[in-house]
View 1 (cartoon, rainbow, N blue to C red):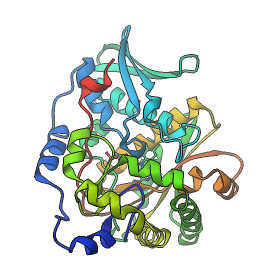
View 2 (view 1 turned 120 degrees about the horizontal axis):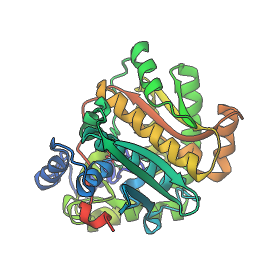
View 3 (view 1 turned 135 degrees about the vertical axis):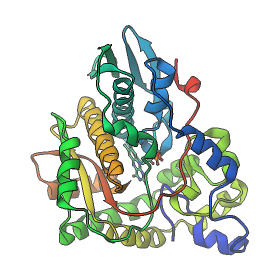
Length: 358
Ligand SMILES: Cc1cc2nc3c(=O)[nH]c(=O)nc-3n(C[C@H](O)[C@H](O)[C@H](O)COP(=O)(O)O)c2cc1C
């Protein structure tokens, strides 16, 4: 019943403290803040407004590994490596992909505020810049999906996505150096699931991975609201509970079998997989893969389609080769997501913009 990056103190811990003692639903103070962050607001071409929309992007472990600064006519997005997760992401691939997700949101917000926006990655200082141009840009409908997008880590309803919608999503996410491979063949989905389970088993058994994950889990609303980052239990369908208790039971209830069973059910309930692939494995392409991923997520959201990540086969160095052979030598795989239809889950939080503007 447990889900990795999610929190896990699920069924086992609930049994320990007595089921129903803690709300399965999210907490009102948490939900009010999450709602405030996603309340519709008109974008403006100033750094605070644009960064607000940028930070609503998907990002690894919700560590929000980014720092924004004004740079001439544009905004620079730099990695905050103090928020990297080396046990799950040894080479910081996910940090740079997260910068790609954020810069895509930032550019969409700038355009919605009427300014043109050009995204570039500079290898010398390892920063992404979003250069803002003259007035006159058109609002992209993807902008409106920014506040409605979330990772939905639940069992989906099993319905297929119409081919027309898949084509539209694929075209929206296509970049020059990165793109999607959509997989709807059930046999291929099973092959990927097998690799997810093998890699998940390795991660659950890795003490460094467990320690790192635990550091970013937010078991209680109080802790989540205090830090405004990390992985809040109800966002993954697990009950919130006091941190002291959850930390104690975590090691007992976070098992490979529980995790793998849930992943199997979730993947099999999905309409398909979206695999983000790029032309090379370097930081520029990781950023571009993040942009493609964010565009995929926004395009899907606009069509009422949910998504969640299942990256494990790419995160365990000893098993990554299996996935690379499966996908083929002509591309470098970056991210794996599942998609389909489901009701929304509770929303994650973000730190205040003042904390990420330097
Ligand atoms: C590069 C990258 C890697 C991610 N990897 C995972 C993952 O392996 N498992 C998972 O459940 N979520 C993963 N996520 C999703 C984040 O946990 C999620 O975006 C974050 O918690 C914020 O929640 P939200 O997207 O619902 O706003 C990843 C996101 C990014 C951008």
